Image (cartoon, rainbow, N blue to C red):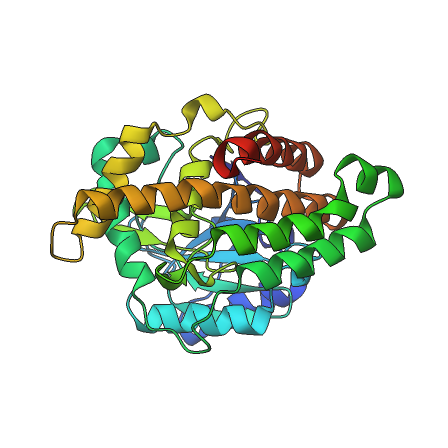
Length: 343
């Protein structure tokens, strides 16, 4: 889960200077001989570090300051606007939904470290924890965020397709059928969009590593909002269900196991708890409709993250087999399309 590093030299110099400045503002002097730098594994867009140091020369191990440092990955500006993401981060923090932003530079930022357990791949399938996630997700979707409250999914996918075509080799473009994907996106937008569907503020990356739990209070915190935007809530549920096939802390973190995809009954249970958290019991027809919509939106998820994998494989040097990950997501798209859309 975590790898110990040597010290601040692991960070870009501007982030080192930012940390020293923040520590000075807090009345601390960073003693590099007593500094603990731990790289957190499982991140695939950025490199994440937990950094701790004593509050004073006489401090014991229980009297330390801990922050989270995020070093931005290469090429991530393709996926989202960093300034908009920072505004989202700060707004969510103001709503009391996540960590505080402590400081930032172009190379990365320093965030409040939340002392809670990051969920594991198995945790999100635990019935009790899954129910807590469902209720928290409903709360997240109801956040009133600035900006237009319209669906961003389709425009983002078209933009990513354009970037994938620009970056991929002719061989990659042929293998993944990039010339045909514009029509697939158009078809999905037409067939999946419905006037009755609720649009909310979606996280769009609900993998287990982005969900924390306070083991004493059992409260859930959702973190990392880089891909967050308004979308159909059914799309976000589909994303969470798809992430149950992943385990990013194995020797082959890119490999997806769809035998772990939640059963129809598990999906109904999650959706029922999600809808019930609004304060009234949902009708069975309401549950079934959202379950069905979420299942169809898995197709959009597969294309979305397949394109992400293709782009990342060409711009990011984090140790992860992005191309094989993309290959699996596209395979799931083509396998699922006839069953879910009947064509």
